[in-house]
Image 1 (cartoon, helix red, strand yellow):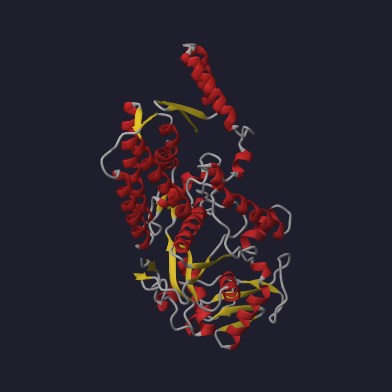
Image 2 (spheres, rainbow, N blue to C red):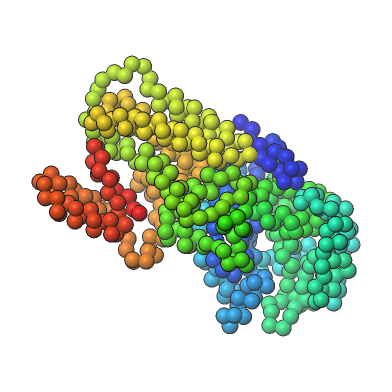
Amino acid sequence: MSLRIYNTLSGKVEEFVPLNPPRVLIYTCGVTVYDDSHVGHGRSLIVFDVFRRFLEHLGYQVKFVRNFTDVDDKIINRAKQECTDFMTIADRYIARYYIDMENIRVRPADVEPRVTEHIKEIIDVIQRLVEKGYAYVVEGDVYFSVKKFKDYGKLSKRDIEELIAGARVEPSEKKKDPLDFALWKASKAGEPAWDSPWGKGRPGWHTECVAMVFKHLGETIDIHGGGLDLVFPHHENEIAQAEAITGKPFARYWMHNGLVTVGGQKMSKSLGNYVTLREVYTKYHPDILRLLVLFTHYRSPLDFSWEKMEETLKAYERLKGAIEDIELLKKLEVVDEPIGGTHPLYDHVKEFEENFYTALSDDFNTPEALSFVFKLVGELNKVKNKAYSEGKIKKQELEAYEFAAKSLLNTLKRIFGLLEDIYPECKVERVVEKELEAGQVFDEKLIEILIEARNIARKEKVFTVADYIRDKLKELGIILEDTPAGTKWKKK
């Protein structure tokens, strides 16, 4: 099965052909660590986490690099506000980032480089640009001369003359041309600085990623990813520097996810309309955010709201219930009666798997893939509802149901990183459970004992006790649902 993805560089959906298969080299721009990560960051992180899982499923050997920008004007300003040093701020938010990633189940990259650990490599990139005549030095600052790179604008499809006409020069800047960008900034009093051939200073943002890609992946990579807002100027400037040095393509495919919006406006810290990942996963299971992201094609905008989280929660409960209810079906009367041939669920599973992977292979179409997930869930629910209404299930129906539910579960765990809590052998502890406002971690065995006590009370017609247990559990966020096969529970 061939994989086709949209290449921002060509503006077309293309067949994905790695440079050195089965190896695939991927770099995505990481976060600037001056504050907590928000849903906009989370979307990009989830998209590329799932895409990486899918590549691995296809048999590719992925080397995935995602960086940290740990020195930047925003970090320095935050440090000044708190009367501390920039590294304290960076270390704090990198630590919080890792907690967020564990909670939304984004796997660590193979390499997660920090800018401050790559100053030597950054200086080397700048020196090569100066030697080749693409960069110039002015009073300790170093700038890239955009006009000297003839292909500038090829990624963002922007005309260089129009860009220069519309560009502005800040009074503090010493560049020759308004579109030129800083590779190295001369040091200012009270700011972090490193020694360089041009005097003390610090790197410009656009050079950092080029240096880290060169060091950890090489001069040409397979896929460079990031949010759509990075196409210009950041990724455009990366291409200009890298290809000015090597004369080779910097990345064969450029893959960009759409932005997260709130009421149609881009979610960003500067606008103050952002929702942190921590806010989301302390209110909802991490799967809900992952599912919300996957319900939207990665290149389309995603308008975030708490109402959409609630809608996604309902879809998730339907999906989870279809799988978990295997155990309830086993409690029904199981009758050994022939059904006449093979149960249709086996064919539905085959059809699901074919359609699911076909959708993902066509520009990573996760919403279409999910439509086939829920189609199979519908077939499972038909079998389950029939069994509940009759109070019994045929042995072959139960076997087919279990096969289909577990096939679905394995696919969702492996590719989408969903439902990892189901079944003890795959259970993943959530850090957020240690941080609940109530300070409680629910004891599942105790809940089962209370449910058993409630069932005894109902059987003995002591309904005041049964209702009391139900209501008290509800106050603690535990919702009970009575079915013909027994009582289910879930967290709010």
